[in-house]
Length: 91
Ligand code: HEC
Image 1 (spheres, rainbow, N blue to C red):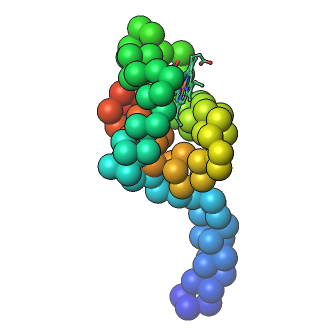
Image 2 (cartoon, protein in one colour):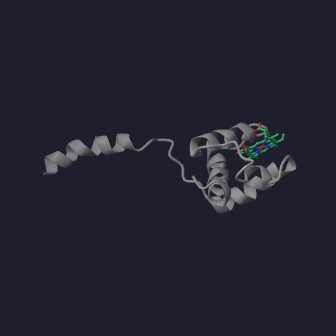
């Protein structure tokens, strides 16, 4: 049994992506304030939105994040994505 566990441990580590970050929606809402320079939250509404998956949402937040100097960090992208998903997209 102990030997079996030793073999399983490395597999388990491989299953967890190294870049897995957890978004904080509270921080995301604050960070999103600067995005309001260009648009309100109206374009996230059902019927208006074009984003169709969580993956695409994260990609778009990252795309807009590069508009700023310095660009948003991966953690900030994750935070804003978490907030947008919780409040509007609900994927
Ligand atoms: C320079 C102006 C500008 C800034 C700054 C900006 N956006 Fe946008 N954003 C747009 C425009 C214009 C669109 C619609 C056209 C498009 O998708 O290219 C858009 C679309 C989006 C969409 C797609 C909505 C959908 O479902 O169709 C998301 C998500 C988004 N923006 C997030 C953000 C976030 C998050 C920030 C802040 C980090 C941000 N934007 C900052 C101009 C901006």
